[in-house]
Length: 332
Ligand code: NAD
Ligand code: DAU
Image (cartoon, rainbow, N blue to C red; front, side):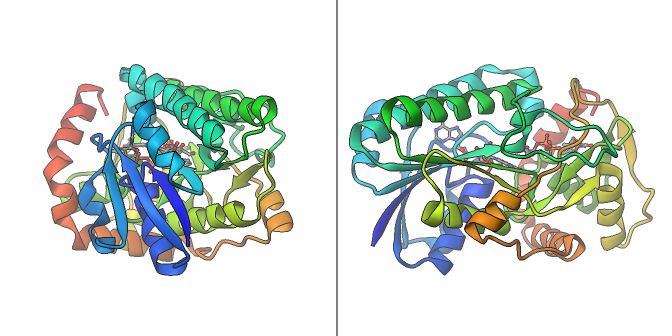
């Protein structure tokens, strides 16, 4: 058995990673470290209860992090403040968790000589022109736009420095926009699904022409396993499944799938500094490590995600009003 320490394992991608690992990789014994911010819920781990150890704690708590890292083989570091809009209204938690938290993890894996995989985002590369054929590669220069993406960029650079200066055994992956079950309803796709389920109109920021490169969360997580198993220390791998779509098309697909008129949405205030387009070239991961995405039919993956929110109203309903009131104050 190999011992995995999963930070942020009660949030969206982390909890899907834990579920995926329990189901498909029985060789791993898992401990989750998560301080349960507004974005993490311990009950997300109920489907794997008894199979996973949960520790409630902060990744900036060096003593706790050291004791957990000392007792594991591999750290998979998902924990972060993850929402761009929140980083615009209050950047401090982003600086604290994404930078100081990652620093704390790095010092622990350095001290105990443990393998680290750092989870990051394509947003570190800034944005691309809408309609251009260009896509991000591992060589694209860093050019983050928001407090969120700049703290993620900073965390990646810390990892790179700890590899080069201290010989820490780490890999990094930068993934595009994930969708799937357990995603917080502040995010684009679940916000619109739960708006329709609540009898409200989906809300498009600005023109709605911005493009995101959608990937199913299980494809992200299968790629993370491939990198943990076969990735080269010190390397960065981009994860994406060629799922570029503009926001308007995504909203229309949600409405059609939910049997509503496809123009039944409204435009709201744009996000300041809104990135125009993300697009990932994942050839390095595919050719060097042999990874392939499974969910290549976005409409089918989206229909499954809609069904999950329909069947799990208990999961999202309690925070819907709070999320919408916050957006309302921002004109969104
Ligand atoms: P999320 O906000 O849903 O979950 C984050 C989790 O981290 C939560 O459970 C939260 O409680 C926990 N956490 C936050 N601060 C913590 C702290 N100080 N100590 C311990 N735990 C803490 O985020 P997500 O969407 O699941 O993203 C996970 C990771 O993947 C992040 O690193 C994010 O940058 C990256 N990422 C996300 C996407 C995406 O589309 N959501 C795409 C690419 C990369
Ligand atoms: O690219 C990876 C990143 O994807 C991750 O690093 C982030 O953690 C994750 O939150 C996501 O960032 P985005 O800012 O792209 O995701 P978000 O869901 O907030 O918004 C997706 C797009 O939809 C974006 O262009 C803004 C737009 N949007 C968002 C909301 C919440 C709307 O049009 N209406 C909305 O109500």
